[in-house]
Image: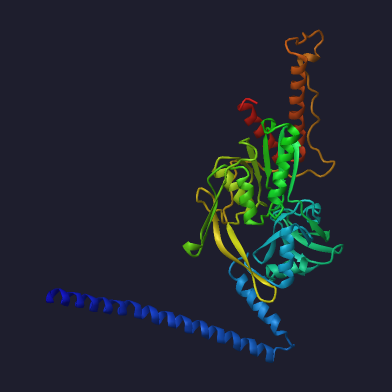
Length: 443
């Protein structure tokens, strides 16, 4: 018995020595790290006091601290930053669907402001601002060296006031100026319309109204058609949609899915990850979907496109999306401000991250540039000829009058889509795909 007791005592002693040998250096390293942090904070305090005492002009201490906080956050990535009380209030108003400004979603690239996308029906959209445009000057003042929040603040102003922005656009050799009148931006999150038996859902943003607007558009279309069985399909147009609320992206995806994962998020710590799954119920009962995307489709738009693509629920058409695969959390702070900080990356159901890569469409379709008014280099089309125009041709008496009317209606729809190509080639392409799918399904 004595031998066993001695062996146990020796084991405990060895374990104690091992713990001391391993834990000791770790504790010392942690203490050294803490000392380094405190030394850096002391350095910050020293600089702060020297600026207050020695700078050529008197400075507001609150402005210095706000600038330091914003600098700390913006050094992390382009999407993190400090929101002073006014900016925080504006952001909350924007998610409700109304705010003042030009109507563009922007990011920062190489020190300049880059347009992610103009918002439909806004002054920037009417002025012809395009995704990918770089804004280098505002009213002659250079944007170089400004933080994104400072640049956005420079573009703000009273509703009805004029702003002149200088734009650099890929493919053009010289910058050019654009004059825009600021206005109150009232967002209609989803616009719906019918093209024949196809419902087109134009989703411009993901705010509190997006899913309710989408559901209402679908329900109205189904009611007007006399039932979901008469619906030919849906075009979900996410082009130039800069994103918005993650919760709304999940609900829009869930509207067309019966089961399975929609998106997952992974943060710095494993415990911070989340998975969001679809609930039963497809609002259009499995009817075909084409999703339209382009380089202005970002964030929440990419979550929806990626989820429907991975589940093979939709055909994605257009050009590669923007590639913003991170999630920001807005944390209110004392004094009515807030911090916006990147807390996780999101992943599509197949486990892919689209960060800096974007969603690749199943079918790449470029939107041809619009020709200036009056410019038409094409030769006039030759008048078409058919059998029915030949003198003495035989009449077709093998179909009923109802069948003839149905054929004429189908021809009218196809011809309308052809005319739409001049206005919106990508949308016309999407409609062609849906009608092809309907034909294969026996409709």
